[in-house]
Structures are given as C-alpha cells and as structure tokens.
Image 1 (cartoon, rainbow, N blue to C red):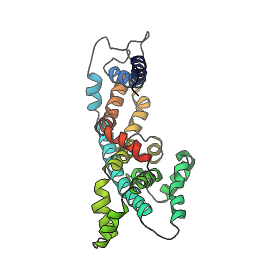
Image 2 (image 1 turned 30 degrees about the vertical axis):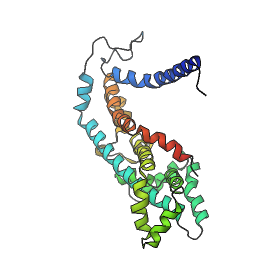
Image 3 (image 1 turned 45 degrees about the vertical axis):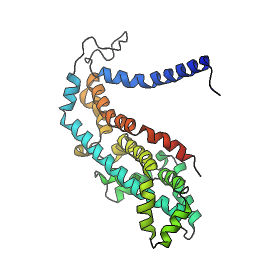
Image 4 (image 1 turned 135 degrees about the horizontal axis):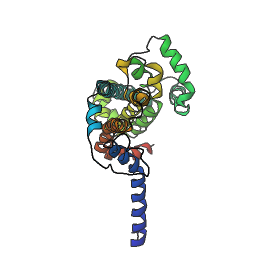
Amino acid sequence: MRKNPPVRIVSAGFVLLIAVTSLFPLAWMAIAGFKGKSEVLKTPFQFFPEVWNTKNYTDILHDSQFVRAMVLTFVGALLFTAASLVVNSLAAYAFARLDFAFKPVWWVFCIAPMFIPAMAILVTSFVVVAKLGMLNTMAVLIIPGVASSIQMFFIRQYYLNFPLAMEEAALIDGANRWQIFLRIFLPQSKAPFVVMGIASFLAYWNSYVWPVLTITNPKLTQIMQYLGNFRSERGNEWGLLMAGSTLAALPTIILVLIFQRYIVQGVRIAGMK
C-alpha cells in the first residue's frame, strides 16, 4: 500500500534531518580548514570563514610527515585488506563446504573472539607481539588483525547459500576443492568481498590505540597517530588540524561513495542462512 502524501513528507523530512545532522560535523570540519587560526573557535559561532583561504590545505600538503603518514597508512590498509580477504574467505569456505573432525568445536573457537571486546585483550596482544619482536614494524599493524571472526562469519553465511549441485558437478568433472574455490566461489564473491574489504580498510585507517602502543618510530607513524599528536607538536593551529583531518577523511569517504550499493547488498547477505 502506497503512503499518503503527508506521511511521505514527514518521512522525507525525518530522513533529511538525519542526513543534515550526520553531515554537519564533516562539513564544518572541511570549511574550518579554510579559516584562520583565531576564527575556528571564534565566538559567537560562525559557520563560514570571513575570508576563504587555502593556506591551511597547502601547508598541510607540504608537510612531509603528513604526506608520509597518509601514504604509509594507505599502503598498510591495502595490504591488510588483501590479507584479510584471502585468509577469511578460505576459512569461510572450509567451514561452509568441507567436513572435517570437530568442525563445530573449531567453528565456536573461531567465532568466539567476536564476543570479546578488543580492549579486553589489548595488553595480552601487546605482550605477544613484543615477545615476537614485531614492535615498530608494519607487520605489527597488519598481521595481528588479519584473521577476523566477523569476516569469517559474514562470508560463510554467503557461501552456505551456494547451490550444492554446482559444486557436485565440478567434483564429478574432476575439479579439486582448490579449483572449485578459485573458479566458482571466488568469482561470485564480489558483494561480500567489497563489504568486508571496506570494513577492513576502514578498521585499519581509523585505528589509533594499537598504532600508539606498538609504533614509536616517527618514520612509521600512521595518519591517526599524526593527527592525535598534532596539538602537542603544533599548539593551537586549529585550522591546520581541520584541514589535515579533512584530507585524512577523504579516502574513506570516496571509498564508501564508490561502493555504496554493495554495502546495501551486504545488509541482505548478513541475513542469509
């Protein structure tokens, strides 16, 4: 049944209100990057600058530490995303389509971390990577988080809905399990891979606590570390900080905008068997 005009207007207004409320901080941050140092926190509040100035953006882009942090974080996020998809998709396929001893027990063991807060095992994780000599390396930012119970669960839900007859036909034709995964399951995994890939990229890009604990080498500083240390190193240069924060947010915003339709598909996938 179609909604009557008043209900549609109210619904549209409510959605618009949520959109404006959500986007206002982002818009203010981007515009604050064009303000002078004294204008950002000026009272009474002024949304637009008196004079539009791109100096903050040009200055932050000429900061070699900022550029290095952006590039290093981007490369690390790509490596982390690729490794996560490979490891978790293989594990998801094994749990969805293979039979092996104590499979239910292993499945419970693999998804149990989903219910444990990351902060609860933060100290333990730090001790482990320290004993392994991984501190102040890119490996400490990538390897510990590659295996993800959430990704395993999500991709496994998708694989459980693949027709069994298609897999049986491939086995009859002489294909092994590795060939079935590469030629049948992998090409049809675009939607869950994009959703989980975006989640992995965002998780790495926005990580702050773990890099602060494990990275002290300035040459390996991640972008969130850089922004977190900005005030102690640069004082109250708020306009410059807002410009840097806006540029740091751009890759994630672009990523979500490009793949937004796959995110919607991911909502349906999550509810599958």
